Each structure stands twice: as structure tokens, then as C-alpha cells.
Amino acid sequence: MHNRWQQTTRLLLMENVLLVLIVLVVLQHFSPIKWSWRLVGCLVGAWLVLAVIEGLIAWRQQSERQRTIDRMEAKLRQMSSQQFPPHILLPQSDPLYSLAQAVNQLESYQKSQTRRAELQEKELMMIMRYLPVGVMVIDHRRQVQLSNPAMSELLQVSVNTVAHIYTKDIQLYALTKLIEDTITSGKNQRATITLIPAPNTQVVEASTVYIQGNRSQFQIVLMLYDITEVYMIEQMQDDFVSNASHELKTPITAISGFTETLLSGAKDDPDTLDQFLHIIADESQRLIDLIQDVLSLSRIRAQNTTMLTLAPLAVRPLIEQELAVVQQAIERQHLTINNQVDADLMITSDSQKLSQIIKNLLTNAIKYNRPHGSVTIATMVSHQTWSLIVKDTGIGISADDQQRIFERFYRASPSRSQQLVSGTGLGLAIVQELVNAMHGTIDVVSQRGVGTTMTVTLPLVASASEQ
Image (tube, rainbow, N blue to C red; front, side, top):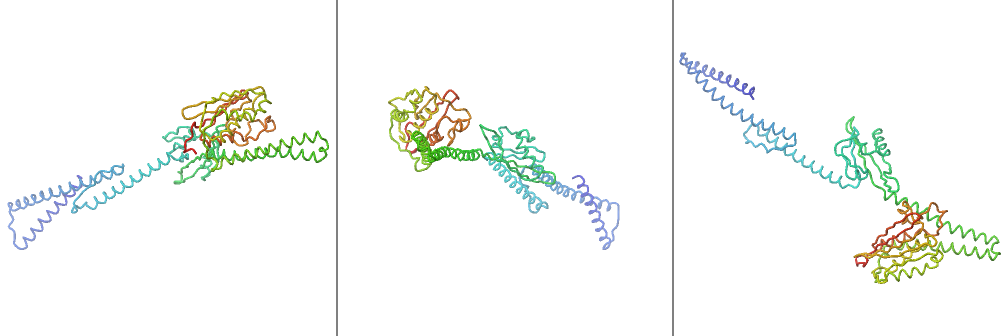
């Protein structure tokens, strides 16, 4: 401002000197001037007064203009740091009016853009927070710039919000290799990776997106999709086909083999004929049981057959009825049955579905029991639910098998050839489907060589909404 004021002062002095000289020349031309020291003094005094007045006016105008310019400079500096002071208001006659309007418009535009960016950032962070897909952004220095809660949950680590090297969070070789391959090749990658092995299997589909910035900078977006359920379903489907094929092949092979033997001449021996026909009849019944179990599962799964036919039921007579059906198997095993169910226990449930649950649980407790073992049947009643407990002293189920015993055709045995107990492997799958249809739960507690306890918990009185 000081330099500008000096320039303005010089211009005013030169202007006044020129003005006085012009006046003197004009006066001298029309009327010769009689010069004297007094006249010169008056002229100099008048010139000084005029210079002072003009200087004051110019100084005031220059000061006001400089203050306006300083306000604009301060406003622009604040705008650069995302601060938005009030608008600069000037009269239209002011020389800086257009410039002030331009600065105000720039501020309004920047403010709207800033608010829009903040809103988009909040929306992005909200989406990232609740996105079920794990997302992580890694820059060209291999540092994590962004990560959402789903990624922390999948990796089972707490990802620091401060930038850090990604290997602090990702230590699985398959994932680090996928990221490094993306960095090396500059191309998107995809792979199916097992984060957690069996028994608590967790499988994800990992995808990387390579985003090129300038020549030396890039970003990698790592996304993890949890496909554990899909993987397990595919695994179960494969097991289902394999197990179903085996369960069908075994009785059919036996029937075919013994039939061919009989046709080859063994039918002429009465004892052999009788023995082989009994075997063929047993294997045929096994096929029938298998088909009936598969059809039962299909009927339970069908929407129109999961409706409950509710009626008041006494639980103990229902259990005694099913015990009578399996009495021969109980006697063959020399088992002791402890029926501890209260004779007065009344519930509201579906008689047919409950009978099938009891039948399958009792059949398993007898089949997989030891000779001279025991089966205990008990119930527990709470305010809104009741539990049916079937406990045996049989061979038990290992911890790994307990997670799969409700799968179709699954048999808890080291190999099919060593199975000592016949069956379709569908009994517990049917029980689980029925329990789900009746809005209940089933739990298993077992130990190898000690025994198994199955607990089915169902509503004590089903409501109309459950039908």
C-alpha cells in the first residue's frame, strides 16, 4: 500500500504542476502578467492547497480500495482452507464491484461443491459401513487407505484407520499373493479363498480392481464376498449325490447278485433258496424305506404340507405307542427303556409330525446303542415351550460329525464299508425338517463311547400364526 500511495502522490504533483503551467501560459497569452514575489507566493500557496486537498481525497479513496482488496485476499485465503466468511457487499458505483461479485459467486459455488462432496462422502461411508461385502483400498505404497467393518469381520482383525502397510491385516498367503499379482500385472484378479479351514469353514470370493492414477500412482480395491453358505450347499449337493448313489447301489447290487445266483441253479436247493429270498426281501424293504424317507423329505419341504394340524395331545401315550412299534429291536439289543415322561403332560401340536419325530429319535437311540444299554426319555416344560429329551448309552458321535448329522444321507462312520448299523441316513434330516416346520429347535450333545442326548424344543401351545 505504501508504494501505491507514493505512486499516486507523484502523479498528483505532476498533474498540479502541469495544470498551473497551462493556466499561466493561457493568462500570459491574453494578458501579460506582472510577476512579483507576492504573486509567485500566492501561486505556490494555491498550488499547495490544491495538492493537499487532492492528496487527501486520493488517499481516502486509495485506503478504502485497499481495504476492499485486503478483504478479498483474506476471503480467498479462507476459501482455500474450506472456510466461508460472509459475502463482500459493495455499491455498484465502486470500481471493485464486479470483482467482489465474482469472488462472492466463486465462494457460493465452492460452498455448494464442498457440501455436496461432504454429503457424498457421508453416503459413501454409510454404504461402506453397512455393506455386507468386505472392502479395502490399498495405495501404490501398499498402505491401507480405507476399510469397512465387513472386512474387519471377515479377516477377524481390527483394521486401523491410520494408513499402514496392508500385511499387518492380511497375513493369509493366498490373499497377499492375489494382491501382489494385481500390483505386478496391473490387471484385475479373482479367486476363491478359504479364510478358515474346517470345521468352522469360511470361504470367500476375493476380487481385486486395479485403478491407475498417474504414471507412478495407482490404487487397488480388494473386495471379499462371503460365499460360505453357497460353498457348503454345493458341498452338500455333491455329498448328497454321492451318498444317494451309494445307498441305492448297495441294495440293488445285492438283489441283482442273489437273483443271478438263484437263476444259475441255486434255486434248486431249498435251504439256499429260502436264505436268498429272505436277503432279497430285506434289501427290497431297504429300498422301500429309502424311497419313503426321500418322499417324506420332499413332502415336508413342500409349502402346502408344512401347515400344522393342531390338536391337544397327551405326550406319554404317543411315546408308548412308538415304543411298542420298536419293541422287537429293543429286545434284540436287550435294552432298558426309562420312560420318565409325565402322564399328565398335555400340549397343542401336530400329532402326525410329532409321532414321526419321536419314531426317528427312538430308532436312532436303539440302532446306535450298545447291547444291554439303556434309553431314557424325558420332558421339560417351561412357560411357553416344552422339550423332548432322548438319551442313549450308545457309540456316540464325534465333534466333527455333530455338525453334519442333519445332512441328508450323512452317516457318522469312518467309512461306509465299516457301518455296523443299517439305515438310509435320512432320519435326522427328516427330524430337523419337521422341527423347523413346527417352529422348534433341535440340539445334540454327544461323546464318542459314552452316548448321545437329543433335545427337541417345541412351542407348548402353537398360535394361529404358526399354522
